[in-house]
Image (cartoon, rainbow, N blue to C red; front, side, top):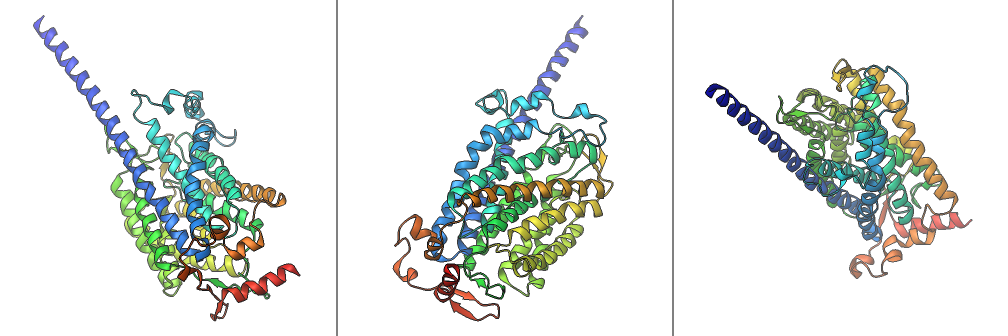
Length: 480
């Protein structure tokens, strides 16, 4: 009798201990995602600083406000329908292998994405859904900010915000549902692997921006009569570089938020597909990716400050898809190669395609993002991905390209084409020449001593020419 009572007490103690451990794990997970969300704000501080440094003085405030208003419009739209899209569209089309298809997310998960669901409001019985939602929300801001840099100095604010909602709350989250979830059809059936969002965030946003740029057109004076590219000097290159470094700091939180805390099971961490990994392996890949990217960007651009630091960003995007797999040396070398190719592609887009991408976002995010998933198929084929442990392959990664390239590019192109036909896409010529700041805010928004200085634009041969002279010639051409 006594032995039975002792055994019962021990069982109750074990149950209490297990319950306490589970609660500790839930609270740890909640705190973890909370701090990743807080630190990811640095990415958006960085984007605002970076873009404000790239533009000419007459567009600084309008550029900063555009970044702030991105948060204002993407936040509610992502809450009201973006999260629902993610939770309800993971099963995808009925193609490819169907084994274990029942493991895909069910209608229960879909119900959790409805804004009035218990999991999306104050709920003391749920420690994870709200902070996990916020992590994805900040990813959405990032996609819109990537597009923002490419379109600087000539897009209407209203049109940009409409495109930001489309990209941030519909397009990218749809591809995340398909290929950036353990229940996504591309993962479950084809082993698609993009752990830290080379393609699903960066690549798709860069391709969306390219579609918009085709309809938006270059800034006035960007190209000569012969089609040669001029260089618009940044108003503050140090501010631009500092903004990029802030983005890089926030990336540690961004990439940490791509993990799942499973503190009650070894090794305590899982990637977004629920395969085991560690926080240290992610951080090492990220750091060596920056180092390799800086190296490749520096040598390929011959020491150009902008492309040196942008090379670091391209390098990290290039290793992101396999950041949970690569050893440090592999991350360094893959990032270096990605940066080299990205600098070349950036120059080709600007000079040969004559696409005026103000910050090189199409090359740095779009091209490097596409490379990122290809590298996984080349260097990490056979790695088991997802709860079905489907082997990663070059064919599965190429499927990702076949799906996501048209999804990103065509959605951006079609939406901006409609806005262009409605004459809503681009600011009037007079506003672009005068500057967005005096047009949208106040003629004397800048200090007088700064407002009097004329911008300089570098001709294709490197000769510095006063901007007013180029604008006057370009305006005559537009009129005639």
